[in-house]
Amino acid sequence: MKNTPFTEKHIALGAKMAEFAGYNMPISYTGINDEHAAVRNNAGVFDVSHMGEFILKGPKALDLIQRVTSNDASKLTPGKAQYSCLPNEQGGIVDDLIVYCLEENNSYMLVVNASNIEKDWNWISSKNTEGVEMQNISDKTALLAIQGPKAVEYMQQLTDVDLVNLKYYTFAKGTFAGVDNVVISATGYTGSGGIEIYFEDKDDNSTRIWDEIFRIGGPKGLKPIGLGARDTLRLEKGFCLYGNDIDDTTSPLEAGLGWITKFTKDFTARPILEQQKAEGVQRKLVGLEMVDKGIPRHGYKIQDAEGNEIGYVTSGTQSPTLGKAIAVAYVNKSFAAEGNEVFVVVRDKALKAQVVKMPFLK
Image 1 (cartoon, rainbow, N blue to C red):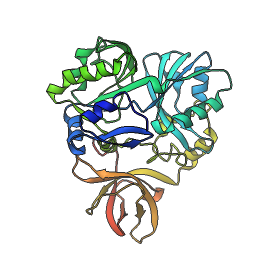
Image 2 (image 1 turned 180 degrees about the vertical axis):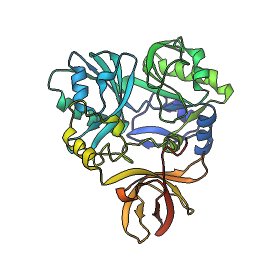
Image 3 (image 1 turned 180 degrees about the horizontal axis):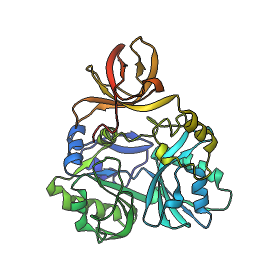
Image 4 (image 1 turned 30 degrees about the vertical axis):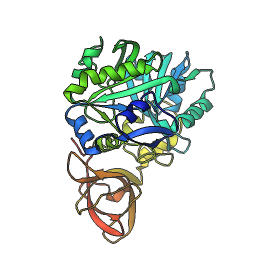
């Protein structure tokens, strides 16, 4: 297993550790519900240094990004970021990612999922027919997500960047905790606000930044947060997780990601996805709330009232904030309307659930 720059910090704090995407990662410290509440109500810090970062440079960099991603990166100007995905030749999803514009038409950073670093690199490289300079900086880049309604207030003391006026999906480079050249991004996967910071893992930068974050935030209730709460937080907001809710067999239109699929440009599998848009998809990713008592989990079957299989759960949990069991699932389009009644098979019992609008937490 690989370590992140913060692995020893997690172990020293008593984190429950486990393998994730080849890395030794913290799953929880004080408990998922406790950590979840800290992020929803105050602030928390996630080590997400396992994520992948690629730099694409040169006069043809934008052209390559336009061809491999579904969203329209030509809309990006320096300091702006964009959620997107990499469609495969069949219209499935190689990965979802964030595209950062460092220098218009010339320099971009792509942030990809940890489990897909090699796969994404090979995929983009295979489409790089015009000599775009590509650098994989994943192994030397540290990434922390400081999330929650109080995160910006606490972290403002550590930087010269105006965090309060940093709009969602924009970023700036500046000094953070005395470390230069830190990318501070108003992004995150919790739906509770905050920032993500990217910096080079060298000269004890990581130790200095981690220690300073907790020196400022710790006395005010900021906590370290594991991957367990990261999952419940993103699920309450209906954010897709690669490998669960989206993968090589699911199209962005099935997954409700039509908003990042722009037909104003040419890109991989555009004709397939255009046809899907015109004809409609046969299944849709929907939110479910359990009516009967039981927790839906990844892979559980979904049936109609007659017991016919109509879909499957991709992610599910007991929502710490809402106090009810929720799930994301693919169902046949005829059952996808809000208010429809379906049944989740939990331990051979068909338990009643209702299709609801996402996000679960408004």
